[in-house]
Image: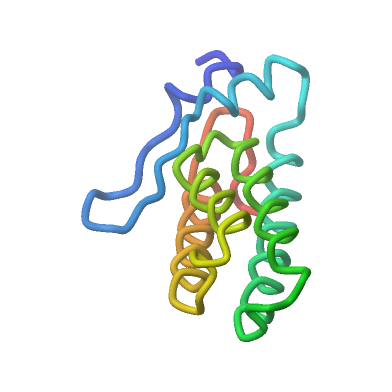
Length: 131
């Protein structure tokens, strides 16, 4: 199987498990541009965990000036891997104070964690998923 066709190698999680839709063609595009997808995804997942942890810390400070910027940054990160629905939800929360409450932040964090789990579980021929 060609290493540049991640979308064909991607095996979706079981339907009974929660999932966050993303377009694996975005990952294909990264590989076609010469990006080491294994290194990219490892770093991406680490950075996302850090950002989601910070988002969890800020959820109690809904008036924090840092919250919209962090939501916007995370929206950009999920956009890189083709998670368009989550990207739009994060971007909307970053620009709409009425969408920034503890419950909605918790839901966005959970969706981000699901996406991380999916990307960590995804395999393709040239990716070492044992790290």
